[in-house]
Length: 122
Length: 108
Image (cartoon, rainbow over all chains, first blue to last red; front, side):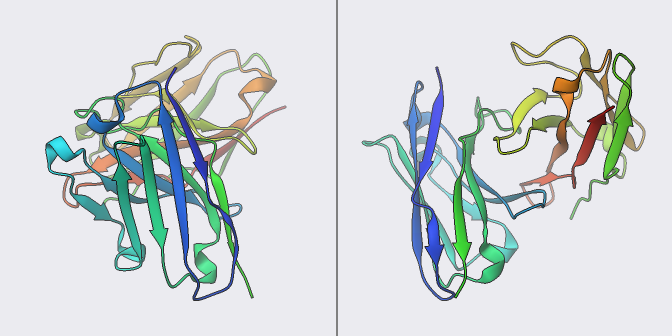
């Protein structure tokens, strides 16, 4: 069974930093293109960014609102995806989901982790 | 960038058919995907590539795509179908995914 489990969320002051993790299991993680998607309270889904597999170059790409502050990385030896969030703003308050393309050719996401809540507040 | 428009809410009586729309410029030229999200849970893929169902998704859920509107149809609606539904496409101009704003389905 493919499983994604996020962790690392919490309460952070504006301007602070946080690193989220997503532990993967049930598939060959090193071959997967992984994404982060967030959802602010009561709002819709917002794609944050993506990292390709190292075999496909390992490139990252980010949504405009987070570019320059968010960094996605991966440790294939640990089957783990990361999201480093710097200079946190109140508008970054959201549940952050880890998800993936089931096959590289797909342009949809399946499955999704359960999410981890990040709250930015003074 | 590409914009997807969904109605904020749709209501349907139990046992009837609900249609949730997703509007976009020439969306028929896009592959549209649909996610179901129940309160406090992660999104679940229910339709991909306009009309295909992942394993385990009931045949009561179906998708179509024509002109400027893609549609998720839920037949014989059940209270368990109450959820937020999001459409999604891949914007080739930015090489990034785009989500619709979501539609809350009420079965009552």
